[in-house]
Image 1 (cartoon, helix red, strand yellow):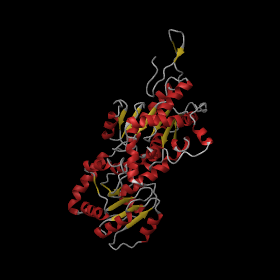
Image 2 (cartoon, helix red, strand yellow):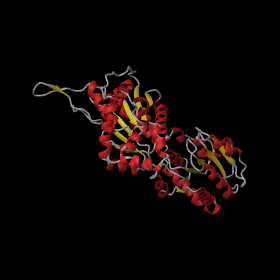
Image 3 (tube, one colour):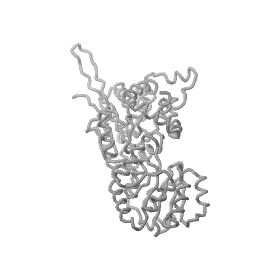
Image 4 (cartoon, one colour):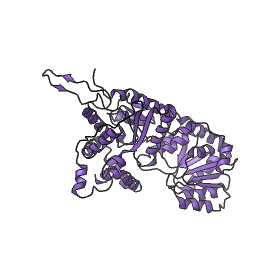
Amino acid sequence: MDIAWRAIGGAGIGAGAGGLLRLWPFQSRSTPAARDKKQKTILIMMSNTGGGHKASAEALKQACEEKYGDKYRVLIVDMWKEHTPAPWNTMPDSYSFLVKHGMLWRLAYHSIQPRMIHVPYFCAMRAFIGRHLAAAFDHYDPDLVVSVHPLMQHINCQVLRERAKRLGRARPTPFATVVTDFTTCHNTWFCKDVDKCFVPTEFCRQLGLGMGLRPSQLVLYGLPIRPIFSKRLPGRTQLRKKLGLLPDVPAILLVGGGEGMGALKATVEQLDARLQGDAQVAVICGRNKKLLQELRARQWQGGSHVVACGFVDNIHEWMAACDTIITKAGPGTIAEALISGLPILLNGNVPCQEEGNIPYVLDNGVGAFETDPAKIADIMQDWLAKENRQEFRAMAHRSRVLGKPQAVYHIVEELAQLADSLGAEARLPARKCCSSSGKRGSSELPVGQLVAA
């Protein structure tokens, strides 16, 4: 359990009576902040444990602002880092350490997978961080709370229920989960107290049903991807000219993630040696400046045209300009590649939550999986061969069919409805009933359940 504690909370608590007092579970006494009653607030809770959660939160915000203008004030908040005390506010740092050590991460991941473990575990955590979260909700005073992180359902639903009771409101603030894992989902994603749970695949929907959510709670639209992926882009020739790619040579996009991880250099070397200039390679190195400098200074013996970039914010253009992609099995990149109609060669994955993405790509006939750079080059040579061009195009077509560029808009529409309807009800005063003894009382309601009229 110590590793699971680190996975959720981070490093040690620290010494001293002052630290213990800060953790003591006194009830929040703060009152809701002043707000513009004409503008509803949607609070999206995320945590920087991997880039996917933040990317999904930003996609939801962008789509909401595009569709509704300033009708809603959309706030993206790292609840663990900004509104919990030590050790829980160090959770993102713990995650980065654990995923680099696969066995430790597997132990942490699976140790809190059973409901009989994580439900009481979250209850114990709430005793220490509940008042801090309640104070945060009082500060933001949202009309809707949205979670894009697996560890933000159970505790926050309970805190919102207690807050509604403290403020004398008819029901808790509505709560929605947007699952940002593609297939393999940790059980903590699924909390029966939420109003809605948006899932990206049928596989995830079945997991939610197995965890006790009602069919009416689960909504299947797809993964929320930045709205720019649904927009019409310039033609491929124009994009290639802008990005420094050759106009008439097949282009392979090699993505190393935000940190430029993976055997990128070895992969480019093998592609150059195998394809001998019959394809060009665009490499996204992320923040790996050393790799970027090495690739740009390199003279490629096979004659390949190689374009190397650091961290980019126009990945949609790179995908539209290329014919295929090599990337790890991250859900966001897979979803973006599907929308872009790219055959996908997966070259790695984060243990546990990304493992299920591999068979999803293979079973749907939109790609392959290989970690060895030499074999990756062999696969690419086979895909791009003239005799296999028809099958390659068919794979690209299957990929585009699986893509769901409108998913983010559909999710935002339902979130807006929740904020308008249940959000308004959550601000009404609770109906107090007189018992036969003449005493007044009110029922404690779970999120998603209204006071009976």
